[in-house]
Image (tube, rainbow, N blue to C red; front, side, top):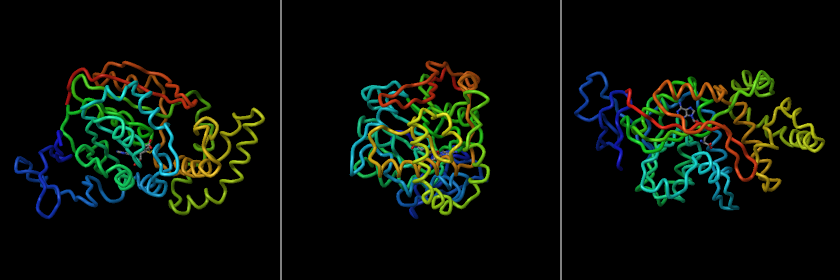
Length: 336
Ligand SMILES: C[S@@+](CC[C@H](N)C(=O)[O-])C[C@H]1O[C@@H](n2cnc3c(N)ncnc32)[C@H](O)[C@@H]1O
């Protein structure tokens, strides 16, 4: 392990105690800290058991391999394309680097890094989605895959450590976009690269959408109940959405309580897979506590405010038609 875990509170190095918990080392001169962190199912835990991301833990443990490229039943290159196009990386660019992935979910991007590069990957997620990621990716990669349950706001790594930091599909779901960006930058080396994607505010109409009308209510429905509501209604919703798309009325699908199938799904999914993706992504749309879309200019100013140089800001087009909103930046100086 090139980068040692440190206590997210006092920043002193962590040592493994013989009861298999991480403890602050003797260097910890903060007598109030002395915190111990559990290692559960081989995964160090730096969070409280229950937090605002519980819905994601539920979701990713239910749909643990739905969006993984190398699924037993078929192969996709969706996550691979997304990672390498969004980062504008080649697998060789990442060779031997120390990479930090924040908000890894079930590990769709962890899997791509681990199967296409020899980089050391440090992944965190705030929820117990880390269980799904571990199931998908731990075996065979123990020497270079370091997975822990932690929040972007309290990461168990020293500042100025990583060559690359990426955070995909996450920032809009954190309470403060700006604080999250600041935290990502703090862990990159000077000269290191940070790449993020996010939901975008396109104009006044962005929030005229079933998601923004209904989520204040649906996020309070218990996860199991919300999932079964979606499962019981998904078939007619898919039918109406397909009819609207067939007749060129895609703009009306924003009023349907279902994910946008036309622009967010890969083209070659089987009918069964399409249904599974629709249930997963509709749950992902209605269950989060936070959903804060941003404009390119606001994300750019957050990076600039924290002493980064923007190297790219715009829409990235993937080969199968998927588009994402990406900002890439280089850390110029350390302000921590
Ligand atoms: C929509 S999922 C995306 C997961 C994965 N990156 C993907 O694209 O499949 C968002 C993830 O961000 C995680 N997350 C939310 N808030 C977080 C925080 N404060 N720190 C770390 N992860 C967080 C959630 O637990 C969830 O797994």
